[in-house]
Length: 158
Image 1 (tube, helix red, strand yellow):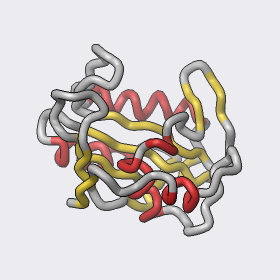
Image 2 (cartoon, helix red, strand yellow):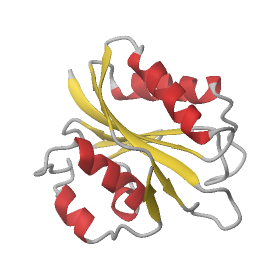
Image 3 (cartoon, helix red, strand yellow):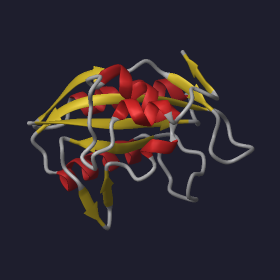
């Protein structure tokens, strides 16, 4: 079993409900246990003119391989009406593998640590609620340093 952190986001179709349903679905994945969930946060969209996002981070312990977990998470997204029409477009649900144990993953379909984790307060602050204070990402960066460089701006804890 490895500790895996998943970023959740939604800005369509009752976003908080979308996140709750996704957490319930993740809790039922095979070879996987949901061990924690951050508070929910609201954040501005990366693109202007979109509704605000509701975000959270979940901690899983799983023995699924990374691409197996990615497939399972994408199935949850699809079950909840996710349509991939435009990059960073509005969505019912977005599930991103942020960290997968201490693995560095560089596959065409999956990059871990998530390639923009350091820029996203809506990921870092919920992650900090669940992760150990001295968390070191697989690429060597420290979570506390990423937090120090990414102010709590545009976020609202729900």
